[in-house]
Amino acid sequence: MLRDVREWFDGAADGEIRALEEVPGIDPERLRELWCAEPELMLRLDGLHTAAQRAFERRTRVAVTEELLRALRAVAQGADVARLETAVALAGTRLEADTATAGARGLNTGLTCGIVISPVILLVVFALGEWVPGLFGAGLGCQERLALAGALVCFAGGAMGAVFSVIVRLRDPRQLIRDSRVGVGVGGVDGPGGAGPAVDPVQLSRALRQEGWYRVVVGWFLATALYLLVAGGILTLLTPPGSPAELCGPGPLSADGHGALVETWFFWGAIGFLAGLNERWARGLLRHPSAPGGEASGPGDGARRS
Image (cartoon, rainbow, N blue to C red; front, side):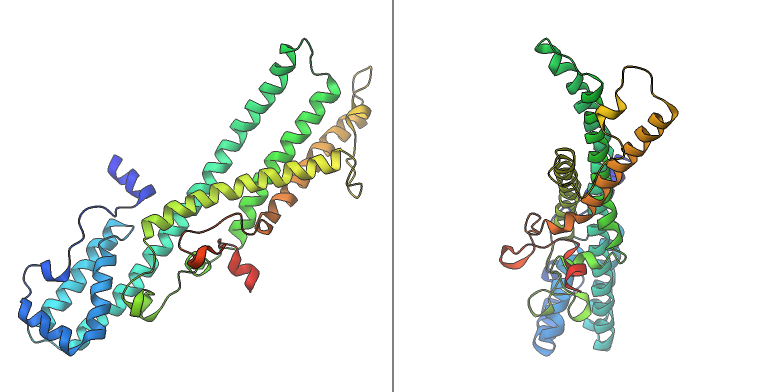
């Protein structure tokens, strides 16, 4: 049970990688003959066999490896080489899908982690806002509490906006691979000479998990920055329905005052959400380890280029 949970998050790529020459049941002399007769096909087979042993899902690893070896043994015993070509093409497609699954699962896990942690951070910040002034013999009044609450609502809206921005631009899980500059070549591979996937799916999953978390963090900062600009009077284009000074009177709030308070919270939540939607503008902040030359690349880059 624990292994299944761990593999769902981190993938099942573990253990020693075996080369074709180490697989039992295949005549080494016949294998050398196949290398001489079909060098390109054997190069792709070798790359896919290695990639299958580090596939993200265990069932993919087992199924693809067994199918490739079954086809290779059949050809080594005299079967038509077309069977091996078919097995290689199918293996490339399955490994491409496995890599897309790894990327999607990693990114979704990172985004979910950011959303789950957001309310925890909000509670901690609010508690510190109440506790820290007391250390200096001061306390928060009505206006200060409303300002802090508005900032936290805007903060939460930024996290939701960032997550929504990513989800909208990722209708196809394979977009993760294309936008991460891990293309799909012949037979679903893109290594040297089409010999195998250009990225380790386990590493891709971990990198995109971190990237999903970073995108939520970017949404936090953008929302907080926009809140400071609006609440500080620097950006006057947007005006809250009610200011803390208007809502904090000597007596209890009227019905209109309660309505203005609710509208103010919705206003700051919407401001944060709109700010979080623009997390893709933080270009260059999120860098993918598989991108050649260290160029910035993220799941949203393909949507921008198109």
